[in-house]
Amino acid sequence: MSDSKYKIIAGLGNPGKDYAQTRHNIGFLAVDALASKSHLIFDKSRFDSEYVKARIMGKDVFLIKPLTFMNRSGLSIHKFASYYKIEIEDIIIVHDDMDLEFGKIKIVKSRGHGGHNGVRSIMDAFGNNDYTRVRVGVGHPLSGRDITGHVLGSFSPDEMSFLDKTTDTASNACLHILENGVISAMNAFNQNTDR
Image 1 (tube, rainbow, N blue to C red):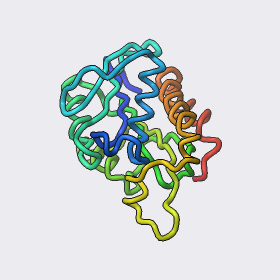
Image 2 (cartoon, rainbow, N blue to C red):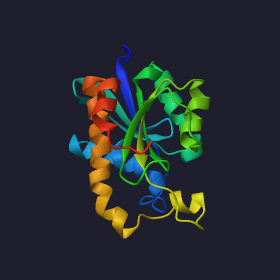
Image 3 (tube, rainbow, N blue to C red):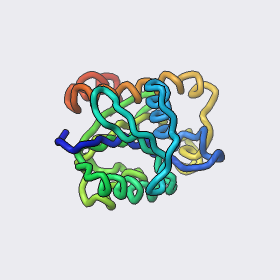
Image 4 (cartoon, one colour):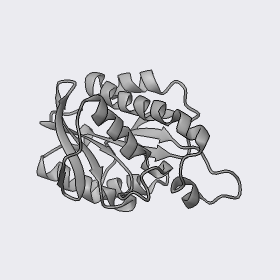
């Protein structure tokens, strides 16, 4: 990571209670878990985001939940980064990923968007992809179910039983990145992933 004064950890999701407990919002849930672990609450809003500023692992960090809807997430994050002069290398994005089994975590950096609209929006807004992503597996839909229905669908009872553990692991991945850097975090968290 570079030497920006601040870091950003942004969870991706859709605003509003209709979406709160859906697979597409697992990024929001992961940064909520991180906030809770750090005894923080999202009590401020700016640049179309809910956020909280805190000192975590010795770093000044903004935890952000864009409220622009998923496919425009990049606009909000870019405004934040521009205003506070935060380099893209100092941004961690946490988001749902259908290419991973439910509950799996994979950390990647400088990779393509993989068809994820929120990630695509961030790439478009910044013009490059040099940020770190914590991909949180939500699995593929059962045959016959459409993709949109899957990501915007509620967690199954089986998934609910793993949800807290999953968001806890994703939040720990963010803490590990802050404390030890991306490569160390990849080595620690990418062991048990499918791809």
